[in-house]
Image (cartoon, rainbow, N blue to C red; front, side, top):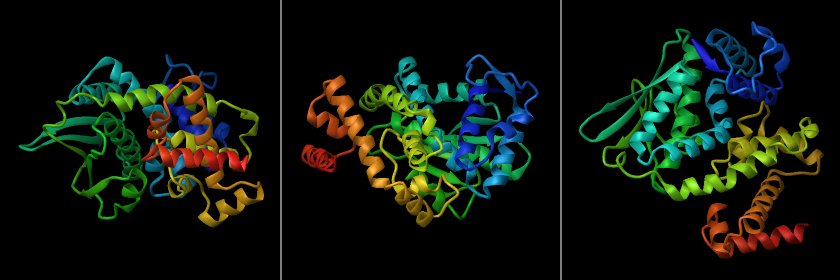
Amino acid sequence: MKIFAPYLLNLLEYAEYQELDSSALKDVLTNQEIDLCNPEEMINAEEYIAIFDKVIEATINDYCGLCFGCYLNLGALGLVLEISLNTSSIEQGVFILQNFLNNKFPLVSATVVQDSENYILQLDSSVEDSKLKRNLLDMVLSIIYRELKLMLPNNFTPQIRLPFIENKPYSDLLKAEVVYNSNYQIILPLDVVKIEINKNKVKEIELLLPKFIAMLNESKEDDKIFSYQIRNMTLNMCSPEIPNFDQVQKQFPYSKRTMQRKLTMEGKSFRSIVNSIKKELSNYLINEKHLKTKDVAFILGYSESSAYLHAVKSWEIKN
């Protein structure tokens, strides 16, 4: 069984945020010279699992897979954009997601089950180790859930069903309704899957994705500075809405107080980092994409143009 090589690169990058040595983790690989950036390369699933297991054990986090899946959000945006170019309906989008897993990450499968009212996407894995299996399913669940949410009409949220009584970490990170079930499932009403993909949301992603990537590629030499790590984690988690402090904090092996103290030592705060991201995105949309104020306000998550303009004034005063 083979895994898309860039997915291992994503895992190694995430491991660095957990203060792990990615070069030591790569010792597991049979081919030490493999180019993990090459989309034509594949690696053995056993090697991916071995490295994933080391990351799980090192983080001492029962929800490592869930957090890692949220970190992969930027890649999810790219996948949604790719799907939108190849299909129009939600149902066809689900079919592409299934093929995507089969061809690039066959450790997890997605099966469609229907009842009289619901269209159910059920996830499973052939991995026998229960901890590994849970973390793999958590990772894929978080990615697919967000992809479906982006494809669906605004303000429509799919339901998640999980085989755990304790589901607060899922509802907190994914901002989803989570209920108990014997399997990993994402639930959509039957009448929703036939509708067209949310083209407005896809347009937002098409506008912002190149800028997100460009911002992540800036100043690589600063990647050891904590505030820069927070900035990059925040960018990676954009969907395209910017995550809050609690969501970002769960991605690091630090308490909220420790994170705030480390940022203060660098003369930064989470709010100042988010505002700098919003300001850069705002300038990009207005100056390079020539959008109207109301459109920029909507894309950046402001309910009204007046709230956005107030934010712009505050950015200017602080600078």
